[in-house]
Image (cartoon, one colour):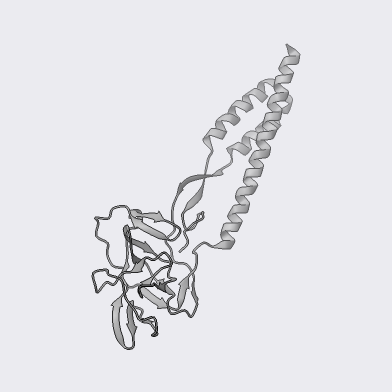
Length: 243
């Protein structure tokens, strides 16, 4: 899962909201007064700058992560797993249980199902211990997460539904609990789809449109600041001439 900016990188998330830039408004009011007193003939330009500052501009308020499901794609790899529904894979790490929706798993050197970082999938039937498999045999994983080889069930993958407010980013795709003492419920109704992967949930076209809009607003504000600086300088020069 890739966390998206509404909008941001890294597996981690920032978003843009539209609100008034109060600091810029204060500067514009001051500049408008100076133009009104010193450059009566150019008041229309000053008002135009004031109107530009008065417009709503994007500001970064906070970082956040979008946990909504991304598009699922077929890979044909039996160790690629995708979650259809809410919840996350529970993994054993050196620092305790961590969570992820990234389902590109592999067989570790200890013949356990793990991700690229060595974090092992937890067996809900065996107190969260790793699931050990035979790398020489095909692996079947049901929608309920039951892992089987040769008709024998080896364990069941743990899928939990932690509160998003209780998660902290750990790397690009993993999350840790901020309160490790709290009980985490199992995900209800979530299916595990073997041979599929979940892509990023960032809508590329929508994000590109937003980025272009933000860049245009930035350029407009930059031009306004430059023009305002020039007008203030000219106003000071006019006062100097009168003196």
